[in-house]
Length: 163
Length: 209
Image 1 (cartoon, rainbow over the protein chains, first blue to last red):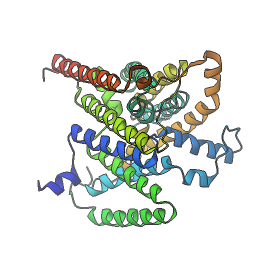
Image 2 (image 1 turned 120 degrees about the vertical axis):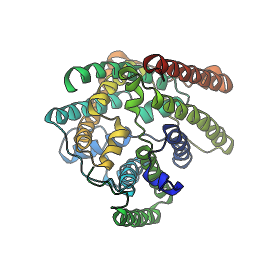
Image 3 (image 1 turned 30 degrees about the vertical axis):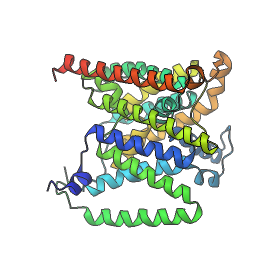
Image 4 (image 1 turned 180 degrees about the vertical axis):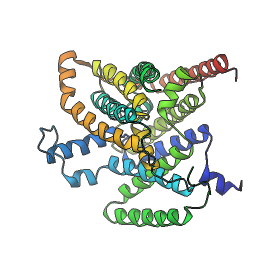
């Protein structure tokens, strides 16, 4: 059962192995796209497209073909499908319902804060922090410090209301 | 666990691999580099899931539990990415290939955005990348978080100018322009090494291991 193939397919891999593989893939994305891997810029584009369809005022007028020819669409879709494949390959794929109602609201509010924060700061953990820092930008480091501050506040909220 | 047999979904995963293969071929007909990008995205998603990689845990666990193993893995990821990006940028310049690194202006929006982002990712149970990964794993909670993300990103985009106009912003700082390439790399890697050591010390202090 502990054949190498099984270890790769069923996991879990040690964190440091994940770090090395992700660094390699991160650099490859930079080589292929000529711009680093980022996640939220593309989500924002989809959100604006949806907003436009719903008749809301938007900043950029994206068409569906703009979105379908954006690199970010494919890295984001890839992450979802890749994670699905990873669970399926280990025969662990299933729907995992929300455990309680408060997690529904915490997910919605948390998602909103995260999306809002990422888009006023021009990046998330990947595009803002990891690849901001890797690009040699001072902003990436400052962003990381304030994510840590936010995490500390978030942990207080988590302990007080959610656990 | 409903499926404790490690091969009970083998047929489905073969089917999904065929589907992904066809999708990659289809997209390659339109644009080869988009197909490669999807392939890289798939590999990233697979790796994130298999190594239980999560930026939220990396930031949160040292505070909540004292565990720093994942935080140190993020530091390895940062260090290798810094070195990799420096080499790739050097090669791009040598080949005169146009490229666009992520060097953005610094401002109050960075500070507010970073803090809100940190709070949000802890209570949503995943950062943006983590949310995408957990959607793939089948978590309904992160599917809800995704809706919140789209709403937040939309609102953020429409109001970013308010922050910038009200507080202004400083010029973006590309560190190698200020310090030179070699000192920047040396300084960043030294800082990461120091952080790595500190996190190791923190874990020993908190958990005795």
